[in-house]
Image (cartoon, rainbow, N blue to C red; front, top):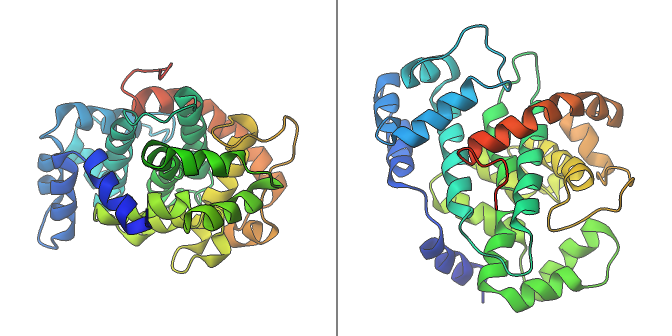
Length: 287
């Protein structure tokens, strides 16, 4: 099955809720106001509530509680609210995709941990772009779910292949499949109409040096995935105690050092359980 065929089949398996598709249309309209965005999101009260919970969580540490979606849009911006809405909606959508022989609880704990770390690595005192990084970190491995569901034999062959480290396994994917789980995840996000700033870090989270417009964010998601693979192993496990398997060039692209990552991890870990509960609507144990 080619990448195009796989993504087409996946489109019938996982799709964003209608409110997110309308949100994309509204945000793409230059004439739309913050109230238009808020009104669209309020069409799904459960999703709007999760977005507000996330805005009011420790991720932001805001001095005052945000009570309305309109206030959230005004405070964070339209693109940022879209990223938060899509992150929570997509995670809920993908949560129902069965993947044989994979612990889904481990998979999502890994993904949420990566999201928490990625958002913490956003640059500057105001953490610009943390919402985009949250979404890219959360969904960086969803391509594996699609592969394990639609191409289980070839996906398992990749995971069981002998190799040394991530990069060898990434090459095995290309040899066996002709593409990678990162390609699948990024294509799905792109087909949902999401901007390059959201799907490119997913596409290149194993090869951040190949990213074009958003190389720094791709490097941050790469680093977050490495940290998560040590602290919260998902499909691909790292031996306990192993150093973060980060490509040397990724540190420079992200503007980080190993020491800075280590110093930031407690902050991300403080937010992990809360983020897990918010994203999955109260499920601290996902499965």
